[in-house]
Amino acid sequence: MRRTSVVLFLGGLAVIPFLVHNPYYLHVLNLALINVIVVVGLNLATGVTGQIVLGQAALMGIGAYVTGVLMVHARVPWWLAGFLALGASALVGIGLGAVSTRIKGHYLAITTLGFNEIFRLITVNETPITGGPSGMTGIPQLRLAGLRLHPDQQLYLPLLVLSVAMTYVAMRVYRSRFGRNFRAIRDNEVAAEVMGVNSRTAKIQAFVLCSLWGGLGGVAYVLLVGFVAPNNFTIYESIRFLVMLVVGGLGSIPGSYLGALLITILPEALRAWEQYYIAAYALGIIIVLLGFPRGLGAVADWFLEPATRTPLSQAQRASPPRPETEGGLGAP
Image (tube, rainbow, N blue to C red; front, side, top):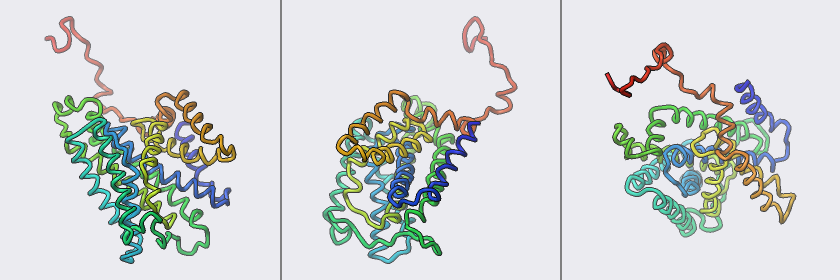
């Protein structure tokens, strides 16, 4: 029943472009799917590893700008530009991960916030390369051969597949040895070190994954829109990604999917309320958090539990629990 509900949910998303022909609605949904990728990456660093990142918009912007610059100035094909953009994002992730080994907590949050602002200032001032405050135009949009449809109609299903695939990969990482190391550091870094976890390496790995997911979201964004500007990657956008993460549930990978969809679509669905839509938007977030204190991940994890539960080994299933003796654990 649970897996059937997940299949129906994804199937419902898949049939939307065949039922909805308004390009604006499809554009909002495409942005929501891109945000899913970015927020899932943010969850790997912040929700799973416990490293507060307030610069995810800058990581997304690196992917977008590197792709746009290579396609416009160097005439590089989109697939190669995207690959190189992911490489640049990974390098930035290594740098941020190295910084996270020296500072932590709110100091790390302020550092990533400053990184976001530094990135914005670079894109504003390097006009010959980035286009300056007005942004970079003339970036070729990705179009599928043989289809005479609007780009939002063409790219909806590929973006849906990409968002599901990247969420699945993140879930596999969560259940792997890397994910266990990440969670150990989040819960108690000192205890994790005592148990043999290399916290320095694990933090760098978490930031690289966070940067790769963010950079991939930026690549998808620029190929969809064909335009990129500094205002697309401000500190406000990083805070919005964090809100999506909290609404979805810290540490819940499937919850990030639902949180990103909700926070992207909800403001647009309330636009008809005109000057009251922001208040209604805030009230909607409060209602969700009151109804689901752990975020929407409480629902998503329940539906996906049969698929994500780590199975017990045969020896664990066969052997009964060892009773405690009168002398306590470890007594002869």
